[in-house]
Amino acid sequence: MGKIFSFFNQKGGVGKTTSVVNIAAVIAAFGKKVLLIDLDSQGNATSGLGIEKNENESTAYQLLVENSDPNESIKKTEIENLSIVPSNAHLSGAEMHLISRDQREFVLREQLKKISGSYDFILLDCPPSLGLTSINALTSSDYIIIPLQCEYYALEGLGQLLNTFQLVKKNLSVNLELGGVILTMADIRTNLTQQVIEEVRNYFKEKVFQAVIPRSVKLSEAPSFGKPAVIYDPHNRGSQAYVELGKEFLVRFGSDEDRQKISEKGAEAFTVKSVTPESNETKSEETKTVTSETTVETVTSDNGTEAEPQAASETSSTTPTNS
Ligand SMILES: Nc1ncnc2c1ncn2[C@@H]1O[C@H](COP(=O)(O)OP(=O)(O)OP(=O)(O)O)[C@@H](O)[C@H]1O
Ligand SMILES: [Mg+2]
Image (cartoon, rainbow, N blue to C red):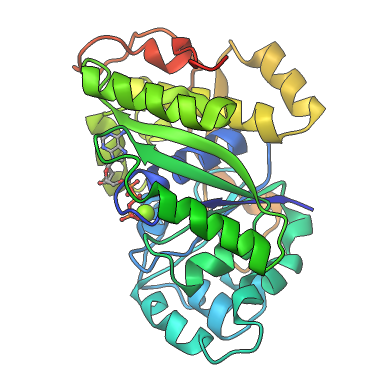
């Protein structure tokens, strides 16, 4: 059974989608079978992985509302081992339909039971709300991953978020655990960012991932090219930080074999293969055409090509205040 993760924060624009897309690409490059489910009607994860938003016949909407065979909604992406259930604006109507359903909080969970055996990791990109779609994501998940933007208001709304997490656990009796906290959009030159990082680490302790994601123009422009930044521009500091984060993710949630692979190969380059998705009905390996290869180097020092201020070593050298 694959482990299921909700990337969740009801606050908008904190880096949920950027994190889920890049982590998915990195762990897929380590050979894990990954399914990303876009549960946001904005469809940012969908377009960020190069999938056309409006041309999809079967999407997360059908999965949630029409109780369709989940396999019909799964599309291959250009990245080997990474598939997606896309989303589009249609999904914004889903909650209205769900509300009258029996067991409405568990619709997604029932659907995912049918397919979780085919994946190592299922990553859910949640919308910025505490609505029924997010509740469905949380009841389906083994872990919640919380991206936090390193800014003054980072902790604002966190009480509400943690409250929702506890309520879902208690009232819906699910085995949901806090899997990790991701610090995003850090401008580590500023004292404010340093203070926020310290405060978050004091509060969440070892749950906070070591890799801190810096603010990076490349991270924000990659989606317009339909690629995760780790493939679009693997050498910039933001991508390097996500490679480190992806490795940490796998060390935390993967198998002994994964940890072994990372300790042996973690310092070497590894390859993310881009493949042309065949017709999404056919899933046979032979029909894949390799069109390009991008090397994602697991670099820890600051040799990024991006003209951004120093201190990228933050991504690997930040020591949690609680350790
Ligand atoms: N580290 C970063 N540096 C610079 N820009 C970033 C970074 N991370 C994300 N962005 C940009 O910030 C915006 C919000 O990021 P993202 O879409 O990942 O957040 P989100 O939490 O998924 O948002 P929403 O709540 O709307 O779904 C996007 O335009 C994204 O490209
Ligand atoms: Mg998003």
